[in-house]
Image 1 (cartoon, rainbow, N blue to C red):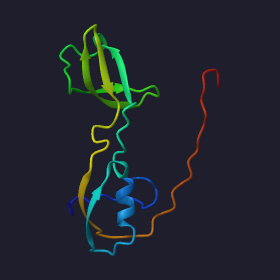
Image 2 (cartoon, one colour):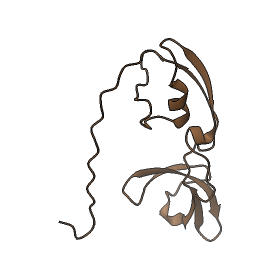
Image 3 (cartoon, rainbow, N blue to C red):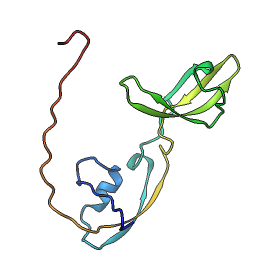
Image 4 (cartoon, helix red, strand yellow):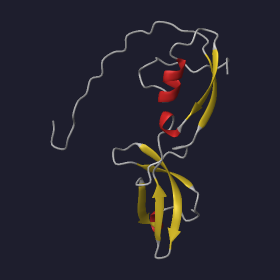
Length: 132
């Protein structure tokens, strides 16, 4: 979409790895069709990324295939898919991205290329209970 192009700095891991790699070396105005494998886009599907929870913790109208937003251990939002509702009141959640493992077909066209401003270094502060 030339009205709302995606802007990013190559090599900074700001987009899918396959897209980042594919645009490197393109000339302005050049287009390319991409077929990105799962590990080049939303990541490979990891079967061990499943979690069993009490079904009572889920919304009452939940069913297999429902996608839910849950709070992760670090406070981040994680999207999960309900894959099983078991007898005994248990449910199985898939923590993979819904498109993990999917092949993506993309059409890209390089509209412009500029020297990027230098990104400011990250400042990291470790905070643990009792600090301060």
